[in-house]
Image (cartoon, rainbow, N blue to C red; front, side, top):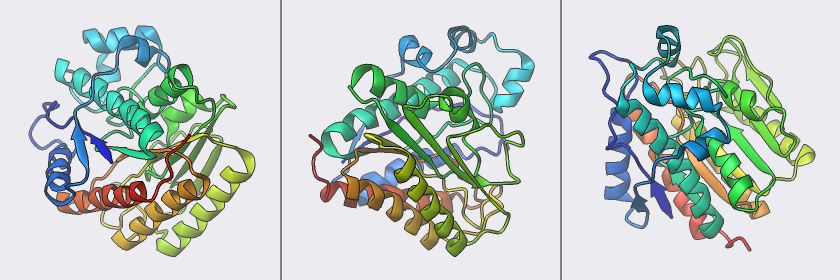
Length: 303
């Protein structure tokens, strides 16, 4: 299995910033040390053409040139820098490459990504460009894939993905998220399931089963992009749910089984994670990558 990484394109942050940027480096190093069968590759940066399939061209230009307003930058949550743009392009490039790899190998992983708050003409919530939306448009434009399902299991609603793709009937955007969590104004996905604060493993898995059953009933995907957020974890500072690490592993296994049963190629992005102990975030993401590798070993190669 190929995993794509861009952690060496470092986004400079001020001291005390709460975004756990170092998790990406630590995850890559652990994958390299403990999963020798995973092949690590650096992705190319997403081009303007690739970004503008999902994003407004004027927004891409202004973001790239550093012409966003103070309020727009505050909404994104990162100080603007050329490094921020390069890293954001590489992260979108990594999900596109994971999609291309999955078409050949069955499954592939972006060791970052999941930037689902970026809308067509704006960024938000640590997201500049929406990698899943950009990758979806790439699959449709370049790879002969018409129908893409995005299974977003980050604890926060995929509002940016819904903004970009929610009206496209060739895409199915599924978001299973905390009801009272960010963003406080929700967009309309093809399927939104909002969970109450304190939802635990059993309640979450029951909701996931309903969500996947509805996806299977309402849509016939040719490809799945999965956002495997670590932030439903009970110890997450921004999560408000009560999932254990074992529960998150069961969540991953259920999504992977859904794809395996249908022989659907799968690209996985890590999405959010804000536990106080960064080691917990890395543990959860690493378990996702390890499970994806196990899926790859048993995957029938797509035609």
